[in-house]
Image 1: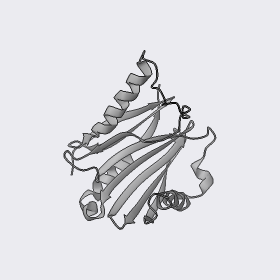
Image 2: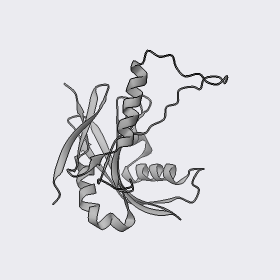
Image 3: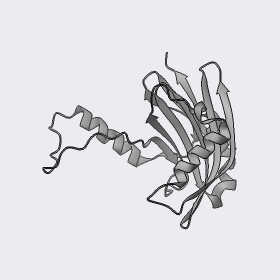
Image 4: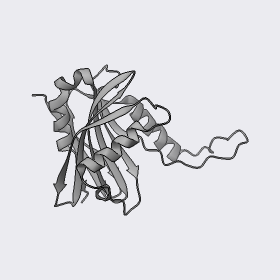
Amino acid sequence: MPIYARLLTLKSLNSSAEFIYPANWVGDQTILYNQIKKAELQRSLDPPPLTNGSSPSRPRNVSGPVAAFGPPGSNGELNVSVIVSTVPQDFSIESFGGPKDVGEVVLRRIARTKRNPDISATLIDAALREDTVNNVKYYKLEFRVESPSFRRHNVAVCCARDGKLYTLNCQAPESAWRSVKEEFFAMADSFSLMVDV
């Protein structure tokens, strides 16, 4: 049985999230550097960069990982990440239907990209976990993503609250799935939002 570390992460509005991950895994340095760069830009007294005569671009609502961990020295194929996206305040995952319906919606978004038309995604399992105390529904999805250049196995958990969509995603090469399956389900089952007091 692996030794787990507990991570409190994600501070946004009135909520935070936590999950466990293997104690020997390390944080993704690129995300750390991007967060430092973003914080420096927000505190900077320097004027913003010039746009080379073109009109300034609108700020985009691009979601990326706010935290990611993986084995030291790995290439990123085996990791767990958390993405927080802004959604309308009244957004409800339940409006897509039950767990399998939610899974199919997620997989259609993964498989239908113009950049990678050769990607296919297959839903293996979908389940719902309810936290009645904090009124949060967690949709756990197990799925496979394949292309001519890779085969991955994923376990993801999605939930929404207060205009934020939280997604924890564990991914591994299909060839490594059997050795990480137990860890992935432990991470997914531990993912939870809390109300800050």
